[in-house]
Length: 97
Image 1 (cartoon, rainbow, N blue to C red):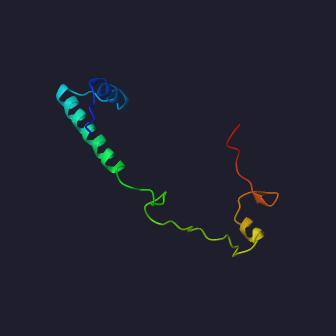
Image 2: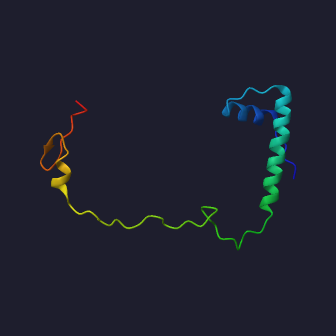
Image 3: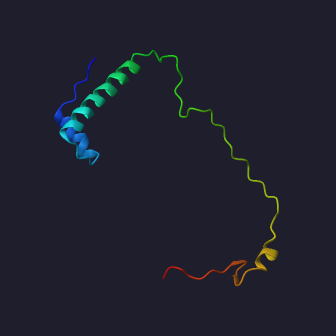
């Protein structure tokens, strides 16, 4: 089925895409858009009833690991490097008034 793209459609798409097309470019764009829509119609003819939908081309597995504490709570040793500390934590300068 041949899709005919009219001048109004090309003008609208040009406005959305912020394009200024010459008359020759508009004619080429009309032909290209028609061919694209024809190709989509061809793809729609495929029987996809038994095809399971997918969200990604490749199989994705959860690559995150469980959080495991390996160094424990060494707070006192860590706070030895702090220029200032308050209530068992680093004290940082106020950045918002």
